[in-house]
Image 1 (cartoon, rainbow, N blue to C red):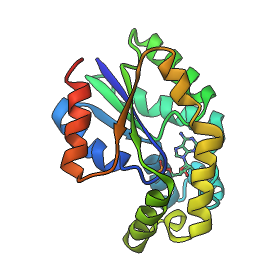
Image 2: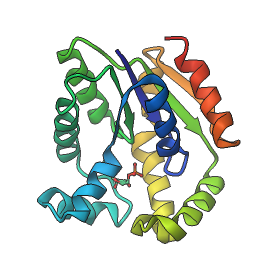
Image 3: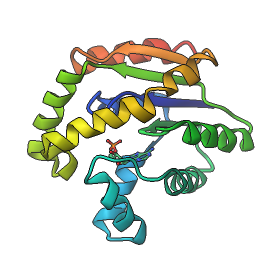
Length: 190
Ligand code: AMP
């Protein structure tokens, strides 16, 4: 099994790259942001709760997010591996993911991190906001808060996976195919 944590700040291109990687490596793509948005659209209890955080650019609480992720993984018992996109975002989530995968006799293979500087992220997200319909892409203050939350709560995971020799930083600036190639060069070693 290959289990990839696709990592990087909001706007780094995780979702875009996940679409290519899931085809090439036949992996199940789980984007926690997409699952939350699906629940918001369908006005589920989870969606109503998640929306109150997402619209402010804050993280949904760990317990809620971890339970949801576990359920998504369990929906795919035949998976050859997973791309985790937007998860984990805290150390508690990283611990929960390790436990979940260990219970299936597997582990995180690699964290592939798309590295992009902040001002490029803000520009990309404002551009995406013109068509994405996402409230959290439409407002520059919310975008900047998401980037702030990334540094405050999520960026430490780089060290978490570096300690396990699983961190692979990728230059996230360039054309989409160029970046896909850079990621493939890492994943082809497994
Ligand atoms: P994304 O689509 O990954 O940019 O996520 C959009 C929003 O969903 C984030 O700004 C958070 O509010 C929420 N979210 C997504 N994934 C997580 C996670 N792993 N932990 C907490 N909140 C999350």
